[in-house]
Amino acid sequence: MKDAFGIPQSLLVLGGTSEIGLAVARRLIARRTRTVWLAGRPSPDLDAAAEELRALGGGGGVDVHVVAFDALDPAGHEAALGKVFAEGDVDLVLLAFGVLGDQANDEGDPAAAVRVAQTNYTGAVSAGLVCAGALQHQGHGSLVVLSSVAGERARRTNFIYGSSKAGLDAFAQGLGDALHGTGVQVMVVRPGFVRTKMTAGLPEAPLATTPEAVALAVEQGLRRRAETVWVPGALRHVMSVLRHVPRPLFRRLPL
Image 1 (cartoon, rainbow, N blue to C red):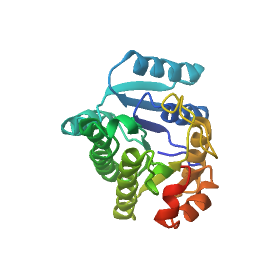
Image 2: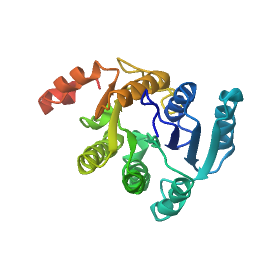
Image 3: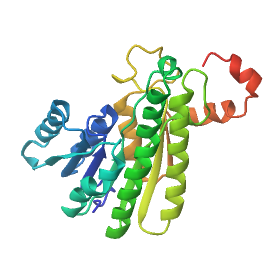
Image 4: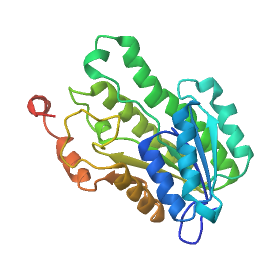
């Protein structure tokens, strides 16, 4: 259960090597989260992430576990994630996996484009529903979904990624409505450009942010039981304007 300050005692990160996911885990461990599950494809990076988080606990006894999970294997999601919930209640599930893809390449490679969509949307729908059902069964908990401002309006330079995030965002909002009144909270987080390994080498966008800033926004959103969080907050107003720009003009913007 969450403590008196709204901090979850147990955390499941879907996308266990995600820089944003790990930043959230580090922040919550510092605020007394005591059990963390990192779900991802078995790899040295996943094991190293778990070891790093264990070290943060010092003598405080943080239990960090890894569980094999593949976003592209929806048929295996119920069994993989069921192992986590079988060990005890989970206060917070953070859906943090996703791929950016390579727009220039993927436009000419439909199979690669589909892989982006299957990871960011189809895989998230499957995992999200499995976790939502488990949270509802236990009667409490939060599901935090990392969306993106890219899903607010498709841009020429990344419409494959953006369309997958648009689908994810709509799914998460609808899921939140479906779970309203059950004791389960769904919070959609919409970061802008985040400086990570995934975005290294790309031109930096205005109002760029960091994994640590997203982690802070997640914590603050959980405390106030927000349904939607923008990172940074100013993007809410920027996207409100861009959403209504006529398409002929939007096409000419350097986005």
